[in-house]
Image (cartoon, rainbow over all chains, first blue to last red; front, top):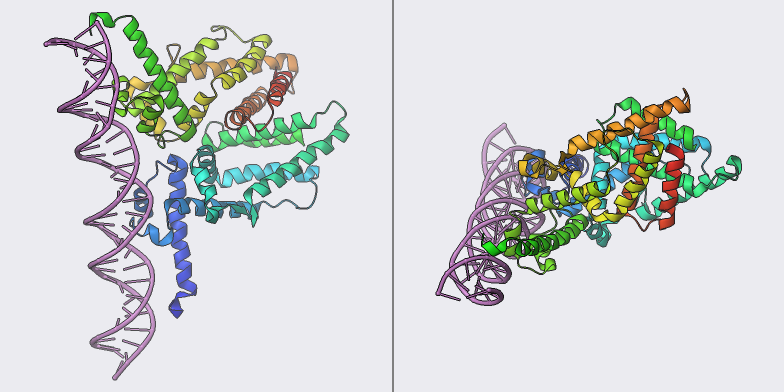
Amino acid sequence: MSPRSSAQFEEMREEKKALIMNTALEHFSDYGFHATTISHIAKHAGISKGLMYNYFKSKEELLAAIINRSLDEIYRSFNPDRDSTLTPDEFENFIRRIFAIFRENRQFWKLIYRVMLQRGVYEHLSDDPDATFTVGGIPLMEYSAYMAKLMSDYFIRKKETEGPDFDPVTEMLMFSNTLKGFALTYIFAPGQYPDEYFEKMVETLIRKYR
Amino acid sequence: MSPRSSAQFEEMREEKKALIMNTALEHFSDYGFHATTISHIAKHAGISKGLMYNYFKSKEELLAAIINRSLDEIYRSFNPDRDSTLTPDEFENFIRRIFAIFRENRQFWKLIYRVMLQRGVYEHLSDDPDATFTVGGIPLMEYSAYMAKLMSDYFIRKKETEGPDFDPVTEMLMFSNTLKGFALTYIFAPGQYPDEYFEKMVETLIRKYR
DNA sequence: TATCTTTGACCGACCGTTCAATCAAAGACG
DNA sequence: CGTCTTTGATTGAACGGTCGGTCAAAGATA
């Protein structure tokens, strides 16, 4: 370690890593993990194949780095009150944030859908202790469970104001799967409907499930 | 072509093709197209690698054959009145059939989700004129467009009975994306909820959108 | 024997990964 | 300032391995 290598050199290194990660994200999310070759990523990033391995020790570590970076980005922009229950206003805000996150990180979500749905890739990543995904320091699985609980509690509490005909489980499943369906359309076929439709859908979701 | 090869030999050949296709479907849908090797399929089908090429002239032709077979199966079990409009009863029946089709052809739908969402694989298949998918003789795209029209008309007609507050476009998008979300859950995480929940969801969908 | 089916060794292509060699830039020295 | 040394980023040929696909030959059948 030479003394000059501290500040600005580290920064340049991070910039280059980011360039590689952006290029790789584009390719992974469009073509999938297996179909994307290191050579393609390198060529599109404007560097040689070998240099890739000065920044990431394997193709899989590159993938893990991309996922972790995006998870952190998302976490920073989306942090509903923890240790608290969801108010209707917070619930409404949650729906809006979710759609915003899909809009701002579309490529990442494409990647996630493909990788998570691809048996083998995700399992292999899970086996590697260095690649355990975290969201704001919390293991991803734990974080998901917490969010699910928050949501579930919200619907259970709604029963008190909505009357005895209200089935919280059914309503929550309807809500979450509708969201899932819109996410899929929005991520993989954003041009299928005009943008106004998606905005309208947000309002409809809020009206129906808030 | 030997003279005796007509009836029963052709039948045996079709049986073996079916065996290969079933095995391949299992592997493609679980691991994806690229990650599945011809050798694995052959081994699991109990034949040699070389013999695969007596039945299918390439890995991609094998994939195309599987997709076409399943499309035909589905078409035969699911043929709502053509050249006609959808009545509420037919609409209800449509929802039930959709879920039944997802249940009966789960592996095929896993394959479809993965292949269709994977840029490159589908494009390559589309380029091959021999691999143009058809449903009951009709090109897949044409068939999809027809079904979408049928559905769209149904919601437009509903406006007459539901009053002026009813927005057919919004309602149809809510419906179709909810269905999409449930399909995704049902296909990729069928164990996430007990079977009764899915049955309940069918009834809820019918109640809300019929 | 003649014909058809089936095999698995084999091929060229391409994959992810490695590493010896290169080179521009920054420090050290005078 | 000019010259020599050191550094670490960068390259691309090369490697071991695996893939989809081929084909000569052995097996099965009649």
